[in-house]
Image (tube, rainbow, N blue to C red; front, side, top):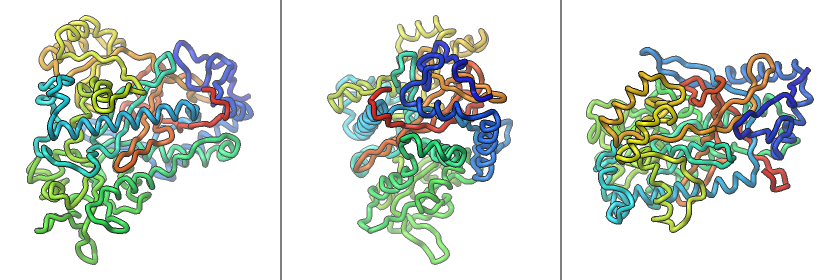
Length: 486
C-alpha cells in the first residue's frame, strides 16, 4: 500500500502539485510517478531517514518561550513543492526589479527625498518610521545599494499568481534552511535527482560571498569578510555559523572586533589585529554601535558607524535599510517601481489597506473578522490578527490598537493561500497551506535563488507558516519540463 494520489483532494485552493484529483501539474508529473512506486515501508523509512539526518546535521532553530530559549529540530516534510522553470524565470525577474526599486527608494530617502517632494509617498510616513536612521543621511554606499540581501515573502492566491506578501530587508533569515532542505532530500531520495531536472541551489554561499566582496573598500584579491552574530542564544545562530562556514568567512561577535584610531575595523586574532573589509551583520541597527545607538549594547562595536561612514568598512545590509521593511512602505512599492524605473511591477502586491487613511481605516474596523491585520514593523508572525480565526475580544483589542496608532497598522484580505500535499500521521497525505521566501542579492549585480525557503502550516486549515508558530518546511524544486507548461 502506497500513497493513494487519486484520493488526494486539492480542495478549493490552488494546489502546487495537482490541478485536479489524480491529475498532477506538468512540473510534478515525474515526482508523482516516482512516489507512486513507494510502499508504506518506503515512505516510513524515508521519513525516518530525514528526521535522523536533521539530528545528525544539527539543523535546529530557537524558540523563545516563557523566558527560555528552546532549541528544536527543524520541522521538515519530505514531499517537495514543485514550480516550473518557466514561471520561476518570470518571478526572479520581478524580484530583481523590486529590490532595485527598493534600493533606489532607500538611497533617495537619505538624500534628496524626491519621492516625497513629488507626492508619491506622504512625508509623515517617513517621519513616523521607526527604522529611519538620521545618522545615515547623506551617506552613499557602494553602487547606491543599501539592502544587499532581501528575503521576499511570496504567496499564491487561488488564481495561481504569485503575490508579494512582504519584504524583509533588515536581517532576513532562512536561507540556510533552504540549503539544508536540499541536502536532506538528496540523502533521503537521491535517485529522484537523477530522473528529474531540478535546478541546484547550493551555489548561494558563493554568490553571497561575491556580493559581499564587491563592497570591499580595499582593492585586494580576497577581501576579509566576517559574519557578525549576536551570539549562540540568537534564534538564527545556526544560520550565522552555517553561512560563515560555507563562505569561508570568520564568525565573530562584537567583542571580537575593534575600531582603530585610523577608523578602520580590525578583528582580534591569535596573530594580532587583522583588518576587516566587509561585515555581514546579523544584528539589528540599534545594537550595532553603542556610540550611536543603544549605549548599553554589548553586541555591537564602538565606533563602527564612524568606520562605515568614513568608507573604511562595508556593512551588509547597510544601517537604515530597514526603513523599507515597514509594511506601510510596502504598500507603495508598486508606485516606487513606476517612479524610479518607469516600469510596471512584474509581481503584484497583495491588496493592502492603510489604517492611517480615514476611509480605509473605517473599512478595516468594520471588517476585522475578514481581514489580516499587521503592525508595520513586527516580524515572525508576531502581533498579527487573523480575522477569521479570531475571537470577538481579540478583534475589540485590535480595534483599539488601530484607533490609538493608525500609522502603525495595515490590513490585507485573508488570502486563499496555495496548498501542497503534506505527510500527516502515518502515510496520510493532506493539503497544507504554504508560502515561499526566495532570497535576492544585489551589489554590482543581482542574483535570485532558484526557488527559496518553502514554509508550510503543519496544522490543518492554519495560515501561519512561521516555524516559531508551529510551521514546518519543504524543499522547493524548480523543474525544467522542456514543455514550457506550468
